[in-house]
Length: 609
Image 1: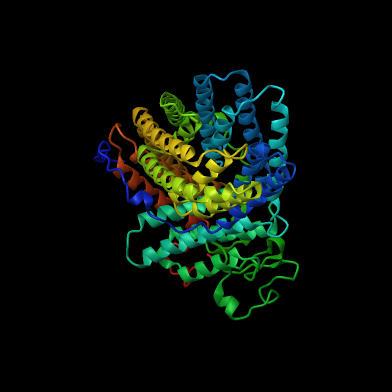
Image 2 (image 1 turned 90 degrees about the horizontal axis):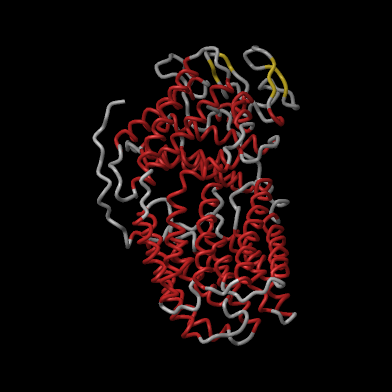
């Protein structure tokens, strides 16, 4: 590939107003909001009844685990939630033991900063989130400054573990009602993104951003569908076929029907049957299963007489569903590569932690310095500054700056809300618990629109938690929170500027090399007449994953400071070449007609590609 003129990456314009712009709420905003209320309420109300509301911070540590893994299939969610609870208990145990062994604030801040760095790196490497490491860091940092004795630690950990077990049950509760809810949502998002890509292509626009977003959505859908490695159910196979249709649209977006894609997406989001993706011309003709050459059990002969064929779970097979060298293929062949990918062992955790070293160093340095400065200013709760710094660190400096702006604005508005709510909360224990529940719900309901809006409720929540052992002067709490917020945001951002990710350029080069190699491999497999469907599908999926990773890596590197200029044009050219290769592999699988052929078959989305 020819060398392209790189663009300068040294001068950045940091956004302010744009960082506060509200987005659309999450499609499932109510799920974490209701889950956290259901997880926090019973333990808190029970302790209130027993007159031991001072122990509620420990049960709340376990209850907050209900915020995690709402985008995971339930089989995977069970494991993720269990690991989150264990991680929370591990951090809490280190904090409680440290608090029982020393009251030296400098030592405690150092321990909290190291814990925050580890939690950030592990959550990023395992892609646990949202809310990722922030909740874990808040729990462990706050526990560092609660007076403890070694004898109290087991009991407090037991309370957190019991609440964590209840949170696990709350997180898994929807499974009997909608066993494939997360997979359905991910598939619907992929279809919507493919429809947006098709609309852009039909409008005559280049659509690079829309196509990249669509590839990311499709890739996310595959991650959701393939994270469960046991034998897939009939429903999951039907969803996999729809994601394949979305992939086909990305190969020929101008030929797709966005309305049909969106209708599929709406149907998938519900609880009804998964829509069929057969040729609508045959469906409109009312062709029955027997007329299609299939018996009711899903077996039969293909209409061209080429031999027996069977569909998965009795799903309908359309004779235009797949083509390869003019011969018809069984719809089941589409999923051969999916099964092969499901059998691939995931990368070990240690290999994913290496690239996160700069972010971990930023977290440790920023958190420890923020805590030290807060102590120097006489703060009684330096963990507020520590947690503020820990919450800032994103994939690059530009995103970190945006999070700093959002955190400061949200916290400043939040302390005003706390000043208004505090008189009500101080009416009694029940009023305090109800205010905490309302803040929990509001935080999760609003944070999807913008982080600062959710922080408006998170801030009074954190302040109310400090009043569980006993009510405190509102003015002191407000003043301390404002100072620690400003200290944590300023010091944390300066640490991010000081510790630049100089590996970002190398990561882009490595991602470009990966895309080139994956593209060459996919092209060779597509050109080989003897290649199997499994090999071709694996090559296509590998290239698609490499393209998504390249875009994410390039976007992350573009927001970094003080690094060499990035090869932006090479990135664009590599993406374009990869998209052409992906289209070629789709045609090789028979999912699209080869351009220039004399076949009367015309691809339209809604037909089985």
